[in-house]
Length: 209
Length: 209
DNA sequence: GTCTATAAATGGATAGAC
DNA sequence: GTCTATCCATTTATAGAC
Image 1: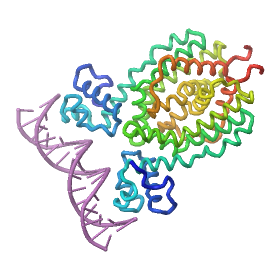
Image 2: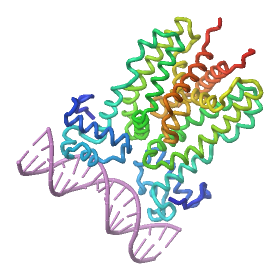
Image 3: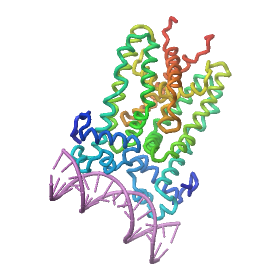
Image 4: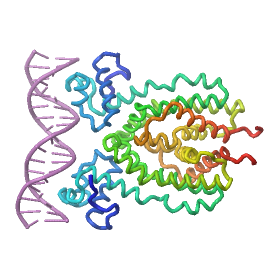
């Protein structure tokens, strides 16, 4: 239950090797399909060593999820977005977000967390807090800011943020999660984001326009 | 690989008992956490009998998914929706859809399919075809119809349909999937749907309005 | 800390009687 | 078709030497 290693262990160390191997294997095959033997083998470490650093398979899994969530791509865009006109800011947020959720890593992680939710409820909270929650909070601030500047006629910022991310995911996210379509090209993603922003901006256009 | 029993076995029969038990257990605990022993026990059937009807655990799983998908709530609404004004039709579709995806059964099924996608790719396709694909197709026809009637300025019906369902899911669906929020009340769902429809209708309002 | 070897349990699938 | 009993592979976790 307790965490034995730091969220991001120093590169090259045994824990780092192990978490690296675990990340790859889990994301590729899913949680329960990966044995501790396989992890130990891939990490070039004995199983006993593995258990010396991570008390159980569940703990290794949680540590891996936390580590993957810790390095989000979304972190660096918010200051820029705030300074742009609404539509441009939304496009920047949208592009970054869509590229992220369409990445194999994010898809695999999401699939796996959902697959494990029922057996490890704490995991869902940890995942949400270290990933989506942060992004949502920032986006909400953006919406609030745009409402104050009079660029968007938003009354319920929570709702608007939900809606925007909903538009960005749409069925594309589902089809990617189900492995029913290839990752769209960047050009396709861009058109998709533009369409979402257009709809959103029209829907929240201030009255006098 | 081959299906041994009909998609919906006659009620009361052994296969029906088994699929019922499997459905409950799988949706509650997830695929790999449920043993064939547990299914047999819950179904009041010996394990050998179980294997006489379903060749393997995977096959039982696929049969269960197909059965759950076969009885969708979405089936009966389309004719009504087509006859209504755009906004009302969208609200009808939206309410039905949102109630469905917020149901414990749909959530559990979706979680499980995602958790198994990597190990059983055929499953994802089967799930999509027997569930979401049908709904999407119908909704697309609705959009096309409304565009023809001039009620909505839609040029790309696929895109618009994606967007509408995206708005209906939004973060609510994610939080429900992660078990991070209780099922919203029907009143909350209705307000949520109304907001989605409002945004959508504004965004696709014909020019002369 | 790290390894080899192994314990202990679980789970998927089957044999053979009725 | 159904049951009881069992096989065999796999997997988590640990014991004990270095």
